[in-house]
Length: 311
Ligand code: CKP
Ligand code: MG
Image (cartoon, rainbow, N blue to C red; front, side, top):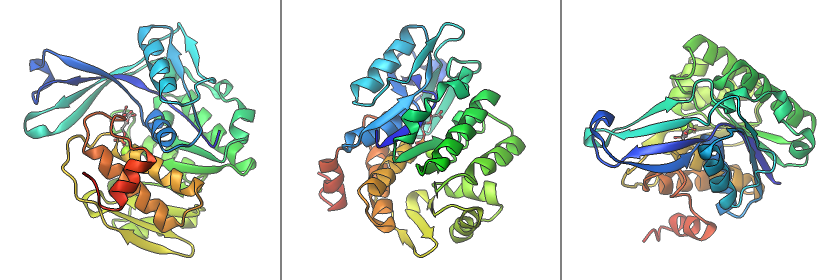
C-alpha cells in the first residue's frame, strides 16, 4: 500500500429537497467519511490505498465495507463488532442551498477502536499515513490510537499528512485545541483551513499559521483558503495557488478531495507547488458535484481541470 488511513465512515442520508430535515420525506443513501473519502480519491487517481475502521455487525457496516472496497481501496484490516452500531449522518440542504450535517455517531462501532486495531506491519510498509482530527474526537481510545499510529509511522519513516478537520459537534474547544496540537506536532504535512489554523495557532494570517506549524516540526503546511485558493510554505519555499472558479453544489468532501490531490502529488514526487495545485483542482471538482465521493476525479479528469478543459 502506498497510503494507509483509518477512521469512521458512516451511511449518509441526504434530503432530496432544499428544506429543513423535518420537512424532507425522501433521502438518498450514500456513504461518507473523511478518511475513506481520501482513500477513494487516491484510488481513483491510481494509487494503492488501505483504509481501516471498526464497523457494526449490521447491514450498514456491510454496505460501507462493500462501498469502500468496491472503489478499489484495501479493507483487509477492517473489523466488525456487535457491541455497537455503524454510525449514520444526515445532510440537510436548507433553503438557499446551505448545507448542514447531523451526526448519529456517539458510542458507534468506530469509536470502540483501540491501539489493537493497528496492524503495525501494514502501516510500516506504506509511504504515507493520512490522519484527520475527526478520529481522535470519537473517543479516548481513538485519540490514543491516532497518537500511536503517528508514533509508529514516525519511527519507520512513513510520512504523515494531517488534516485537522475540526468538528465542533464532536468535542469542546479546549480539548480539541490541546489534542489537535499534540497530533500536529507529530505531522510532516499539515493541511488546515484558515479558520482551523487560526483556532489552533491564535494567528489570523496564513503565513503566520504556516510558520507556527513549521516551528512545531512539520516539513510543509498548506492553508486552505476556500474561494481564495491555498497558501503553502515549507522551510525553503512558499507561495499561493489561486482557486479555480466553480459553481458550488456541495462543499462537503472538498477538503478530503484536496488531501487526496495533495498526497497524490507527493507520491508522484511533484514539487510542493504542483502538489498544492493538484489538491486545489481536485477540491474544486468535488465542490461541483453532489455527494462526498461521487465527484472525485480520475487522473484524466484532473488533467482536464488543470489544463482548463473542464467541459
Ligand atoms: O472536510 P470535508 O468536508 O472534506 O469532510 C467531509 C467528511 O467524515 C464527511 O464525509 C463526513 O462524513 C466527515 O467529514 C465527518 O465526520 O464530518
Ligand atoms: Mg475538511
